[in-house]
Image (cartoon, rainbow, N blue to C red; front, side, top):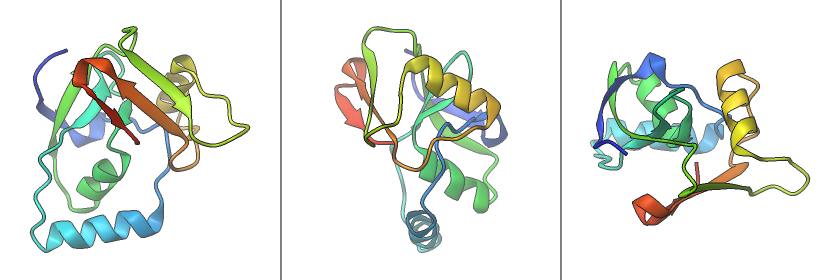
Length: 123
């Protein structure tokens, strides 16, 4: 894992859609001066977003060109993914496929656990 670094917002590839209400709330808060210190977590090889879909969408709306990202090796056994929605198949391979093809999961479908980051993120 590399330290957080700036990545062009156009390089990032979501694998989930966003919830419009949450997105608009975040955009409003950012316009009011909210500062988000947590970087977006992405797979270093493919630039698929693992955590931070709403932040990414909000930053795009606000016209930011570069955003702080934490690049991880998604192939690592220290990163796991599980479904948050019943009846929807989730795997690392499927997350990458959806990110690369634009065939997005519904919002809040996946939950990633990052042993190396010592936290659980709900993208």
